[in-house]
Length: 133
Image (cartoon, rainbow, N blue to C red; front, side, top):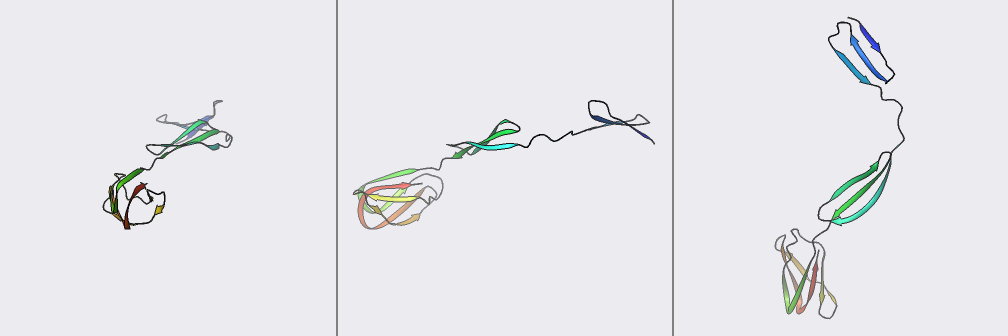
């Protein structure tokens, strides 16, 4: 079996067997192009995480959409030493801050009942609000 190799001007190499049963084409990659320049574009907040790439090589831009975490504000209008909060954020929030009606930050004992509710117990009854995130 013999093989004939030809290289036309379009830079495609054609390999043909003498039996002419099959033709195999192999592309010549040619010289390397310019290196890609990738930069960070916009970073915005949205419902779901997303990354897009815009532009044409060699100059392209990555754009990000970061998911917004749930936020809930509980208002405790009746003074109590135990606040029951149904926040419905869908996870066990780590960001919990409590402020009394006088504007003072108050520390309490947090008990996560589920990923949608919690209780905060204090040493004294008071009213105010809790910020859950």
